[in-house]
Length: 352
Image 1: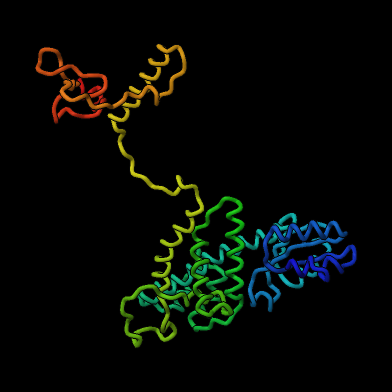
Image 2: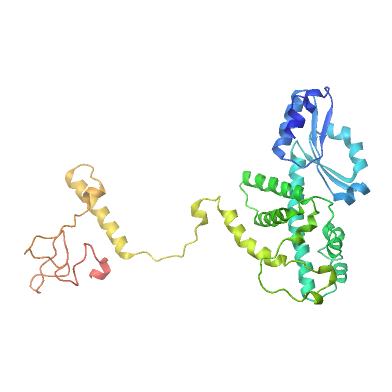
């Protein structure tokens, strides 16, 4: 796209002033805005007008066209749009048409997974899939994918209305835009991974409904082929692939987040000994500072743990004069093995 528009022999270099440039591909919204800015600087107008509707919409002139750009320029080319589609909506300024198209692709990604999984579920439940589709098309699940692509899946017809490789590109654009906006789209991330797998298997030039060809990840023995519906022979278990990739996706979706946001910790009760020691050190630092009349760090005020010299009595922190124990020394506590602990060794409540 950059070469076509910005190259030495590109469109902007050769178009006469007053020309209206219409881009009906699906591309990066930032690129659409850049094209519009450079076109305006040369006295041209640029419109981004991606479409949706697939090969059926193109043949029947029933495409949905999402338009972004200057209103006057859009009105100038509206008669052309009316020849191509029956739903033309001006979304706003440059790049907004591309943003609307990415929203469209996000919906299609989720819908395609739902259609494939519903067919698998219906098959495992022993339903007549054509009758099942007739039923759900008339309810809240009705959508373009059910009407046009689900029948092709049953016929094992994966001829393209829209290439898998193009769909992978569009989902990548949506993920990049969502990253710029600080969004995490886990559903789109999962479907993007599934379609990348389909593309790796050599189905990049197949239609988007080739998602049904995503490989199964289960190693369990397969059911008897003779008992399967002929139209579904060798159909993989997409549900199991989805479950496995969901776990992988969770790592992908959070790996770019701050470390604290990714870490899940169980709550632990506070340690009373550590809390007491912290309060003691704070008090001692203040006391030493007050006596010295200056600023003394807490590290300098930390009591030194020194072992008494040989033959010197070790004080017992619990000891009192006359009870057989020597009173505690300020540097070491413990008169026996059971009391030989670094000072302070117990919370105030335990000491009491």
